[in-house]
Length: 226
Image (cartoon, rainbow, N blue to C red):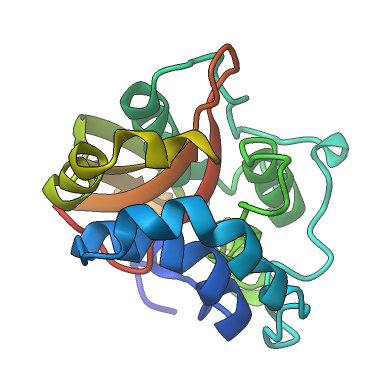
């Protein structure tokens, strides 16, 4: 067995084609700043109705049979009561980059992460988030080595393309109130016998922040946009 086991955030599953239509279009269209971005925001409700087919992930996909938060969340922090998109995205990124296999089972990790998600199924992509968790075999190997990680967030911001899209049509955001935020930071990984290391991290998140409500996580973009 190698001394260093893979980090939690390095393991994902491919988004299903149907989810890409509904959620990735929401994020990537804005990130690319194509001309139809604002119009898509206002019309995505109808567009999403064609994406109701269940996800076709492999049998080992963490998105299948995901536990509810009632299963316990181990070391996963509870979602903060934050109503500002960038601040919430920074907290969510720190959560995604942190884990502790010494006192948290894989099911608890998934349950804790799910508690951060928006309850509006029309806009949530649980597969993109649960896909960050390794499969049961790898999680077990990580636990054998007492692998755990902590995170330091350095900054968060709206990507330029997203800001441009909002500037072109400020009212477009008011249907779903989903914001695109990129977060940068560092992940510190440690395991048995003094092993460890640190690496830079970056993630682009879609967070939902409706007026007079705390923010929630909607999706993780498949690529980072600064």
